[in-house]
Every structure is written in C-alpha cells, then in structure tokens.
Image 1 (cartoon, rainbow, N blue to C red):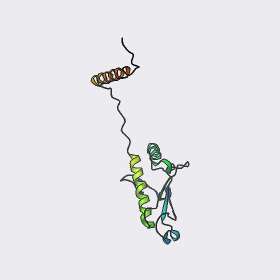
Image 2: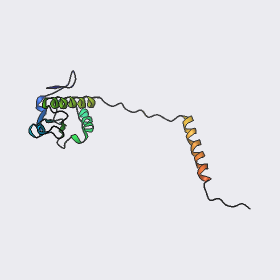
Image 3: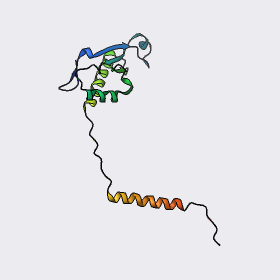
Image 4: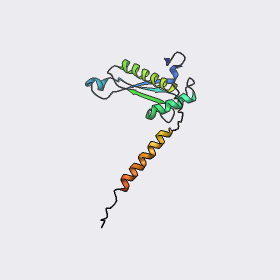
Length: 140
C-alpha cells in the first residue's frame, strides 16, 4: 500500500513493478543485474481517484500515460534496485499529490482607462514614425 496523504492511499493491486537492465555507467554490473525499475500504476481503473484527479494526472503525466490508462514511471537513477524502487514510488506519490490540487480559476480583469490611453498613444506615435519612412520627394 502506497500512502499519498493522510486520507488517500493506493492499493497494491493497482501497482506493478518490473525490473530491467539499466543503461549508462556501471561496468559489467550493468550487464548482469536488473537494477532499473518500471512502475506501472493502473490509474484509469483506480477507485481511489476521482475523475477530475485522473484528468489532471493524465495531463501531468504526458507521454508516460498509455492508451489503456496506465501511468508508467521508469527509474534508473542509482545502481541499487531498492533505491530505484523507492524513488519510483516517491515520484508517483508526488505526481498524484500535484494532481490532487485543483488549479485556481482565472478571473478576467479589464484594462484600466489610463493603460488603454497609453496603448493608443503609443500606437499613434509608432504610426507617425512609420508614416515618415516613405520615399522622400524633392521640394522645389
């Protein structure tokens, strides 16, 4: 069981881990030991998350979200399988915590009268500058 906060937890059946060989430095150890962890979270089927949280989680996950509604985290930061496993679980918990926070609704505001007037004055001035760039005719 993975606790997200005081009231929310993820059951063990929703998580599955597989260990694969890691890339990068490590010498012969890399070729022998499967230290990288792939953590799969069945987010779409999870009864613990609301529909809004699932939608926000899908947006936060990006490419890590599969077509089946599964969130996949791959961690190969360290040469220790246990540490990589803990890092993956921590990252999943942080991602879900971020999805739990509903974004503030934006309140539309009107520009002030002074800012409107300054904008128009700047546009007029810029137009005068551009108008003066035409071909110069000789005056006789």
